Length: 115
Image (cartoon, rainbow, N blue to C red; front, side, top):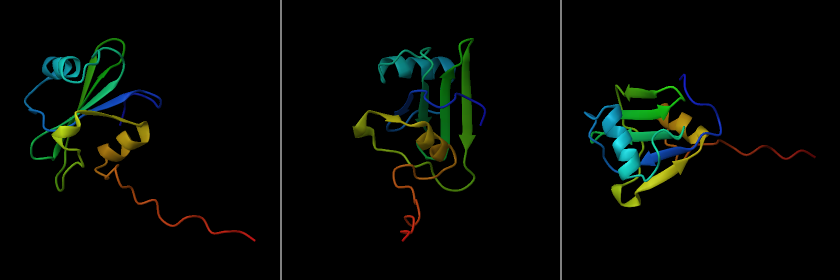
């Protein structure tokens, strides 16, 4: 995915978002609901009711970028509405974008002990 680099702040809007919203509507949600400045350079993540659609809103310094992904199968893992907003790391955002459950990643077996 072309987009912001590592170290960027990422805010996930918990609960459901109307996926008919465009850049202006999502920017208003970032400001009014998440209490963040939409043009701050942070990434804002929104998920639809069915769970198969994800929108990311990002200000790149010249204008807003809107990334939109629809899964053919499965759902994006998402916290419930009661949790408000959450911060994610760049690694968690990458897992989310790929449809991996970023809350419980399978890291595999720990390294074997030497000696």
